[in-house]
Length: 155
Image (tube, rainbow, N blue to C red):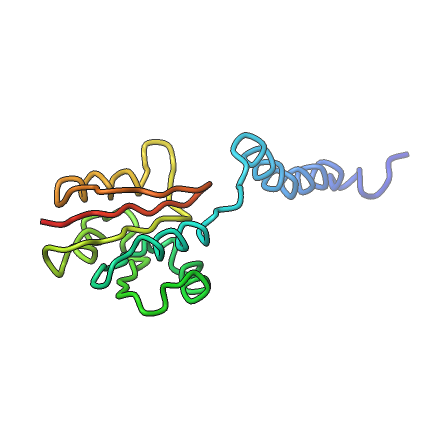
């Protein structure tokens, strides 16, 4: 004799429901096995920028780095720095970030990156730096795991 659940087709539905509930967590786990999310070391990058910065330097902060930058700004010694923060709307539009970073004309600009949006064929830091390389001269860089800063002398 079949149980009531089997008679009404609940067993296959239960299996499908269980599979549907497990697919997403399994997918996420597999993604992190292939490409694990690691700690991004923004604080030492900011401390190095603070050591190397000169009065009048502008610090441009990539939109993905803004929350961490705000947290570490004072601790890293950049409380009095002139800062322009990228906006979430800049995703996929490095020209908007370039305008914010170079909008005041000639001078020194530190471009700070962490939590960069990267997908196959998309690397916003690389796209942004390519545009900065055309607008100015890269004078120096500092990088730690998952974070970087690049000093540009803008024309």
